[in-house]
Length: 250
Image (cartoon, rainbow, N blue to C red; front, top):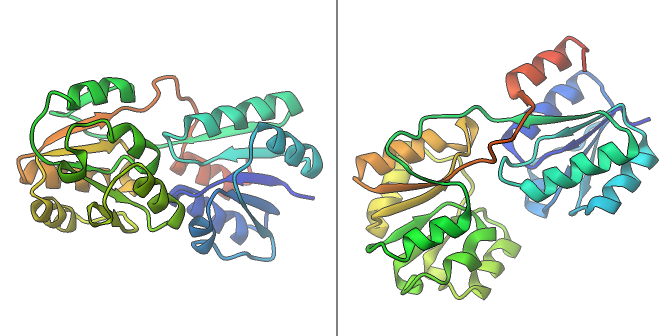
């Protein structure tokens, strides 16, 4: 019997997997991409499901496996996935916990709650833009005037993501495929090499290298445009969730 279904793909998700495996808790971890699967090692009690699941597929999985708990440790900006997990759990009657990243320093950032507002602001800005928003926002950013010359994208080293950026019209030379998190020094080196004036980022948390990005941007005298997290999030921090697992209190 599966005790836990964990939706991962994040650094926190991998930490939870390690502890659940150590505690010999039967777990299925759901990973969306092949790249995410490569970062995990299946164990005796840790089983990996690779591939995106829609709401119906989630409901089927929960009914089939009948876990006592579903943990949502997806990226804090994966709103649609989190909504689907929550809705499927409610329909099936399965207990559900959302893992939250702590809010960090955003002093001096230009903050936008939605992508549309960020795009409108960018249309009035000059200079070179360095985006760490990910591949999902690449198409939206292609409306910026001169984006093929002005805009750099840093994304995960994933073939599907790279293909999406190329389809959006970005030249391959302006797409940096690397696995983070990155140090302040490496961030600053990239910003200087690309002569970037504006950093586009999300509040990805300590494990996502957010502070290192912000510090490097400040060092390089860049403007930081921050796409903020959903304000209605509720859940547990990683430390709180790890403590519950250690104490067998989930």
